[in-house]
Image (tube, rainbow, N blue to C red; front, side):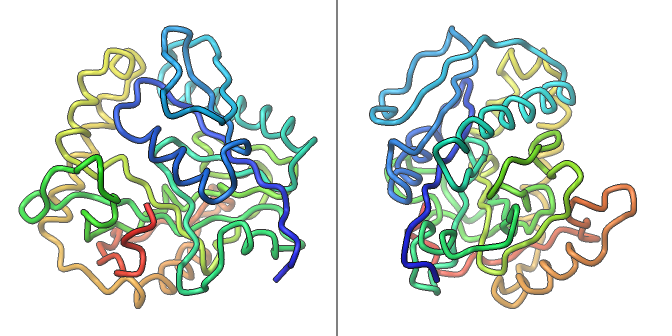
Length: 281
């Protein structure tokens, strides 16, 4: 492991967020320092978050686009900004406001230490864990407590097994789910925790967002509601026993037309989140 820390930037964009901005800033500031965070505020009608003190904020005009076109446009913008950041940084991490790249705490290293020791790699994906509330067991999220102290289950997801960490100028594809023209590598110790479904009531409230309605997110959001039923009906597997299998499956079983994206699991597995992650996010 490298003894010298590399310079690492983290990039996201946000619009109409009700829950994650403060946590996002706190988590990544703790890992890399507030001055290494870059937040794109999508729309001049959005106020600068109170918690954004010390980070870099970029306001851009908002333009409502249909889902597919919007995801492509956002990926292109993220790529452009990341390329500029490489003038001053060695590594750029790009994630959504509800996504957290987490290093397995069993290693006893910081995320900066771990990534600084990576060489001869262009990008890394963390194993995607979609954290979903089990309403029959778990109460509404408390804003003052760690999220993973309040949730026990996650769905292993190819959608969130994203190449979030880049080590050179690359081009993200739509939704940042792939690197254009490049293979991917799922790191054995990295996870991407997605919290968009962490609270059923908050998730359902997104259906009332007029911006999302205009952009065609309604069907996508309705499909997310099925995840709560999936978690309710599941017999959760042990996370630590399932993670290695999921990484292998996503790496080996890929359709030819999506060779640079993780392969689908036949049925996304519901797992119990190991206790060692409880206080991280």
